[in-house]
Image 1 (tube, rainbow, N blue to C red):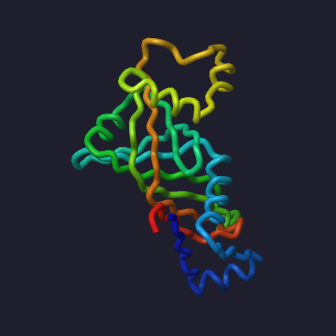
Image 2 (image 1 turned 180 degrees about the vertical axis):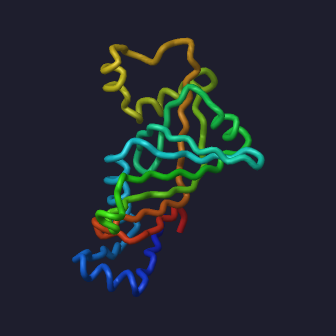
Length: 183
């Protein structure tokens, strides 16, 4: 059963926040916090995926779709797959643009840590097609003027199930809350 931990707001921050009129939410359950996470995840589409192989980290900006709190990424290749073959533990981040000079408290960001699974069109077509349906990419394909992904390319879907998600969005009343998949 998931659980959440709400970070304590430092005293100095509380004093500064009183001047802005921001009031922070107290979440009474993991599911109430998950609703906020889902809203943020749905209004964004790009994450930065961090993988590591040996002693060399790699961060890649990628478009994603979500299925609940699971991230789904369609890709045709790249160094991230060599990294994931060796180490399927990943981190990712999502941030909305903001300028701290205009509004220091306007930052909105998410960090997550979890495990990635690869679904290959060639090697496991059933899992690939199930994940592709969850991604609902029909509209994108239609805009490209095609009905299906081009044949001959071994597309893969990276499915990431986070173990931990940390999210902050002061303007919407969220001061760094951590969600844990396992209580």
